[in-house]
Length: 285
Length: 324
Ligand code: SF4
Image (tube, rainbow over all chains, first blue to last red; front, side, top):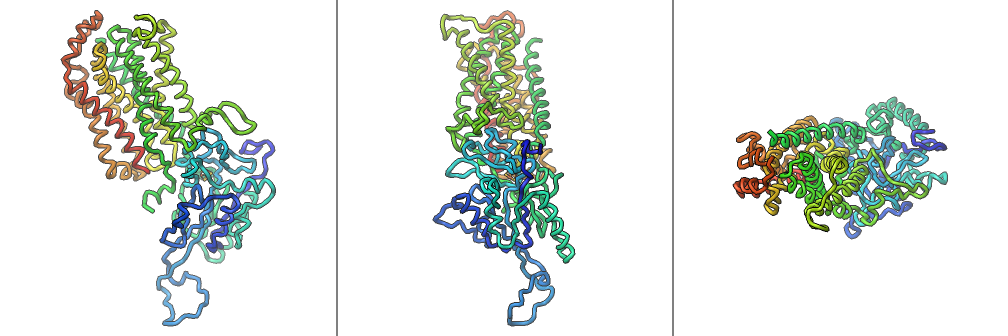
């Protein structure tokens, strides 16, 4: 029996998102919306353009289950890939500032210890036989407790509907042996779907290859089963600190602290009880 | 993206007014039940009017609670999904001891039963139901019943702080003091509410001294917990979020709510001016007690309780709204 509690569990399935080959085409976002019938984010009349960069999705939410983050960074010109385009003017100087793009397709992490699922009072959030985390829309009553619980800010209530929505890792597709829509649409294989164990091996090899090529900043994120959420079912290869991509460096499933919280509230309750008894005993003197 | 968001990478819950007022009524209801129970368990006949008043407050304050909680749901008509598992093939009660919200729902339901029974019982004792001077739940059973109810009341007043702490929000998850803080402030609000309502039920004034005295102790406890709250936020650097402008104004109101209690303690310790002597209370002569209590001014029985209650509300508002 696996940790997911299923007697006949499937191997754990997940995503490995290799951001080093992401070209920012947003095919994943579109495929996800089409397959899962996710409504447009924001008011359809204004297209909700951020006006800051090509990243107009902004962040993950009820209506954005995949989000291609565009991060622009100032770097020395030497680190900008030269595409060999003809140019006019003086040859570029080595130390001149250039801009590099970091692109990363973000998604629900399908945590091993998922806070959203832990705090859900209705049982709408559940763990599937593929060890993924899914919300059942017919059960969810929109209490919203999962929203502040998620350490990544992924799950969200859909304003006009009231219920919470997020990535299902295409539960309906993978049950039929298909790839999730985003992974299938990704033209560079930046999004890879498969058995988690195998993905982890593949990711390790990819990181090594990048290191050997001198890209020493390549690192894996969410691959460690010993981190604060017990490892992610959807993990990443990043080219910078997680913070640069808007990812928490040290996510924690808050229900971990629950017993301590109850204990301390209990201690305070004893203090209150002592104060009450003291004030009531006073009149007896 | 602000620094605070960048540091926490989380989405705010959008819990607002409904939740604020729920936290408030939960604190008053649970606290009043506890105080009423202590009055009755003390077994002094002079305290009985105050005990009944406490049970009335506990019930009336609890009435809006389920309405507020239900309205705050995205799908209000599915409120019962909290209690009954509607997953196909797995029908049964939904009790998840690891989710503070699930535990809270059941505790609220259970406490509602106790608050209703004690409310009806107080009506009977007051002769409002059936013949005058009716008897309530006396004896061991009655005592055990109200004791269990009081423990549930304590839970209802405090669990909301734990519920907030088990999230990934800045401030809420950075401290462990919220459960205790809500509890202490709920109790202090309850004592203030009872002092206030005694004006409408003069017989209950015999117990005003006890209430005023307990108010002072809650205020000290609450102040201590605010200090712990502040200290626990320092390492995470989130102090600026919850004490920044305009939340500072709410905190000023919250601190003002502590003034009556703390000032009282500093000036007169645990003795309360105008309180009938213990000998009078023992003789059970309510008339003397009332006459003595009448000397307490409008200042102590109206202005101060109102200030305390505003403080209770402001404390919760500052903690709920500042992070969103
Ligand atoms: S990333 Fe958030 S929404 Fe996804 S499984 Fe983890 S806690 Fe739940």
